[in-house]
Length: 168
Image (cartoon, rainbow, N blue to C red; front, top):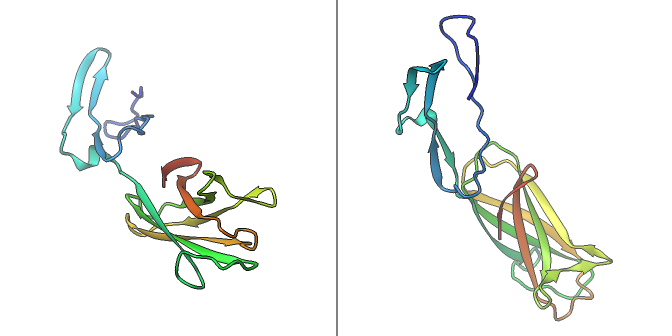
């Protein structure tokens, strides 16, 4: 609700809602308004089909495919450095907002994040989609000389600001 004292007969007032949308993916939320003076209802706007009253909570999905940049396959030669390109497909993003895709290389055998020289191997890409669905590349450059026989998997998380929106 918002309490206000109008300065003119016509105008606008903002009503701010704070809603936990974590369980509302893929749903439309419609705002109904009623205007009161004291306890008396003077007007209302309750149209379930009004697009101007509707907020869509998109169902955001991501999936990935990683390849060796030099060979375009999913193997790495045991040399000093290998560059992997993880192409992340996304669905349901809001165009023209900046997102961050953060990736972590995981050791498939241990199920833990891969550490090299005491640091977890991560990469990220900031991007601003032009459409709701598309792809973004996250690039990892890794010293693979001591990784003979390892199977690596990339885990990705999508963020808007500090809020995690999706993971794969």
